[in-house]
Image (cartoon, rainbow, N blue to C red; front, side, top):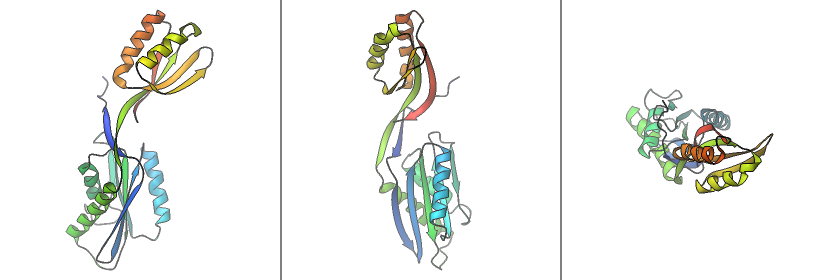
Length: 210
């Protein structure tokens, strides 16, 4: 059984930053658009190198599914940083984002409550400074067909308003493109009918958001 795919997500266009000071400590909140865990880990590694002299680099990231998230207090008292950053992400109902809050300790302890609030505010401010957009879900498909059906294939991919068309040629011409998931079966059926079963459609990847 296929899991139900989310048709639309809210995310950000590009990296945004927000800084605040609390009792001498500097907090730098940054929000990044990400597509996968590997990208998140790369950004985390680069941030740790850039801010090697920081006291903490706390973070949270979240993908489309609510259960697909991770956060870290990075040495701060348990529950004061990572989960607070994640809560800011959830407040804006964002997906495919990473927030890192870098702290330079100023010599005065804040206490658990104020510390958690400050991490939340650093994340919240970074999101407020970002441009939030809605992105639609697409599936990447491959269409394999004979030269006799070129006009038919192009007719139907135009009808179903596919995106990112990439023409490939091997033994037969092929097209890779993006289409809304709910239209895959309809396109496949139309191509099978017009070609008497001689056009083949294969799903290559799900959950691509544009």
